[in-house]
Length: 270
Ligand SMILES: [Fe+2]
Image (cartoon, rainbow, N blue to C red; front, side, top):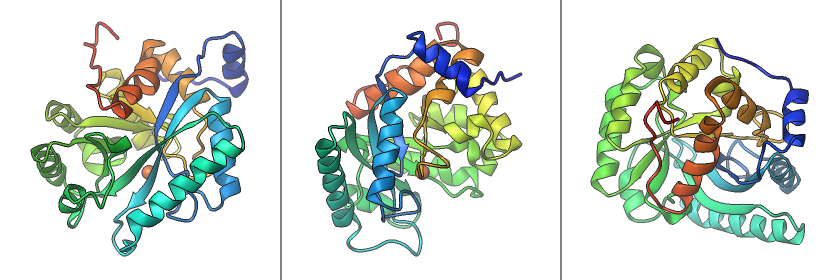
C-alpha cells in the first residue's frame, strides 16, 4: 500500500527542516526550443526557480537527442549554445542552480557510433549516459543496448524503465539489467501515478525490491511534469524510509555527475 501526502504536509515537513538543499535532478527538459520540453526562456527560468525552491542544487539539462525524424546535423551545436545561454541567464538572475550537460539519447540507429564520436553527450561528460528505449520494444533490445554501451566503456542510465511495456510484464528484467551495470532511473510521475495505474504499480514494485538507483523529474514545463521534487521526496520517505529519497535524489545523482560509482546498499541497509 502506497502512502500519499498532501502538499501542505510536505511543506510542513520542509518547514521543520527535514529537507536539505542538495538534491540533483538528472533528467529534465529544461532548455527551450530544442524538444517537447520548455517552450521559452521564461518557462526555463520558472522551472529552475521551482527546482531551487524545493531544494534542488543541480539539474542535468537532458534534451531529447537523435529522435527518429527529428535528428538534426546541428543537434550538438544548438544544444551547447542553449546550455551556455541558459547558464548565463541563471547567473544573471542570481539563481544558484548548477547546470549539467547531458542528453536523453534514443537507443536507435547509430547512437553508439555517435556517442563514440562525441556527437551525442553523456551526463556531465562522465561515463554515465541517459538512454531511452522505445516504450513498446522487446526486452531483448534493451539487453543488447546495455551490452553495446558497456563494451564501449559507458554506463547506461536507463530512463524510466517502469514505463516500458516489457518491464510491466516482467519487472525482473530490471534486476538483470542492474547486474549488467545499468543504472535504473525512475520518473517522479511514474511514482505519483501520472502515467497510469500500471506504471505506478510497476514503479512501487521496483522500489519495494530496492531495484531503483535514481529518481528524477523528467520535467517538461513549469505546469505539468514539473521540476518540483518536494512531493516525491515525501512519498518516497513515507513509504520506504528517508534513506530512500536520500539515495535516489541526493547520493546517487551526485555520484553520477562526479563520474563516481553509485551506491547500491543491500535491502537491509536501506
Ligand atoms: Fe525525458
